[in-house]
Image 1 (cartoon, rainbow, N blue to C red):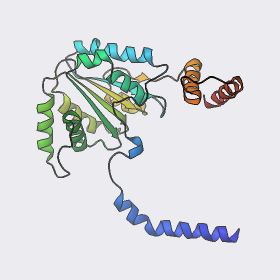
Image 2 (cartoon, rainbow, N blue to C red):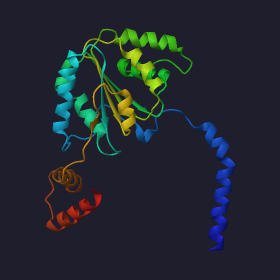
Image 3 (cartoon, one colour):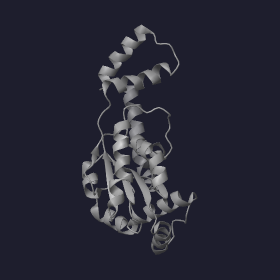
Image 4 (cartoon, one colour):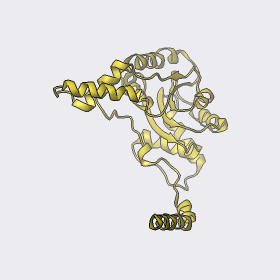
Length: 243
């Protein structure tokens, strides 16, 4: 026991010693595990068809009648499927045909105007744009040239920042698009949705028991595998503990 205690104390001292160095090396941006893209990582998605259709109907219908930029927030707990729902909407055929530009940006914690402008330009052009020292004025002008009078859909995925002034600055910059331009936001925080949204937030519901089982079954047994009755019983017992 004494040896273990000494070892733990040594680890603690080592961490304390290296802490300033670790803080200096911390990079601002999106951690790898939080990175998302517009591409659906799996072909089968369960239980989100009605919600997808509701959002698509708004984007290609009601939003097109509005003169101002519309912002549609999707709110829900982590892992509930906000990003997956946004991907379904983003890749829907009606959405693809309706918008001149579709842009996907993963936000996370860094919501600075400079980073957002660079990220949106990069998403539109398909290649990295500018370095760290690029002037904000040039970034804003370049972005507005790309967006001006175009009907575009911008997805801002995984948004955390609750400072309204940050959003107002970006919103003013993005308001140069054509009629029907829309922004789809995903966030865990209801306050973010209230700050940004021009319509009431879509609060993501949990999957039904049936859809939960279909998802679990597909992952556990595979699409073409025969089901073992005993394993099915065990699987359903596991699901009860997950919901």
